[in-house]
Image 1 (cartoon, rainbow, N blue to C red):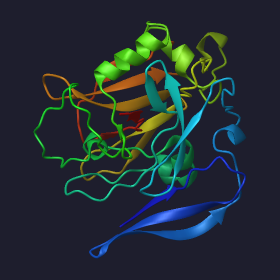
Image 2 (image 1 turned 90 degrees about the vertical axis):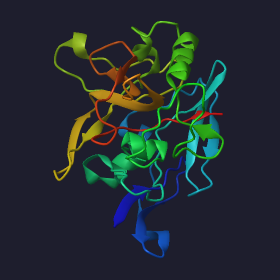
Image 3 (image 1 turned 180 degrees about the vertical axis):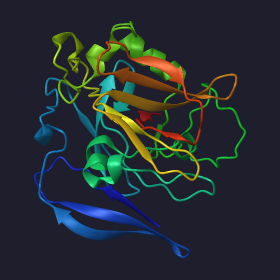
Image 4 (image 1 turned 60 degrees about the vertical axis):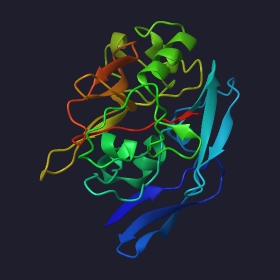
Length: 261
């Protein structure tokens, strides 16, 4: 089985397209071809907020480089994770939106919650906010919790009903003819949230790719009392950045944003 992912880079150098080749003898990356140079996001009309002091983080597992941003007491990845984890029985393989490599480079991969948490799909443990769960994040980083989401809200205006305006990217959200529904953000804090959609799956059915440019869903580690995982989300026609729970750990695949330990 081969999972196609792309190497992230800010540099004006060619970007190698890689495939993760899985076999009984182990996993390895195989170079497929080299794409023309481009600056991820901004070459598609979505600029970085250069008034924000950026950091960088290298994922030593595959060498990919991510921008990071410090907001209050937290340091977040300013891009979605684009990593292919080792297979765990019962996990869904991460997907690129529409199966397109460039969508993985821009939006990161889409993960089932159990894959994001790096656990078997049959695991019955309940994850709570008091424990930092690394999941598939790089070493020194972890899947954010509901408590950390609330800290992010406190650090960005203390109002989840309007936080989406301040956290969404300045471009890249769907525009409709009526101006009232044109809801790009200000990216005030450099979080640069894009509408990367989701992959909705059912056992034995084809992957369904939904809502690119319309919604952004980000996995959280925390679970409700009914063991439903939480996620944080924003929409193209709304100002909020809110919480909700997903009804399945396996059938809805979202991007991952890691937060520093």
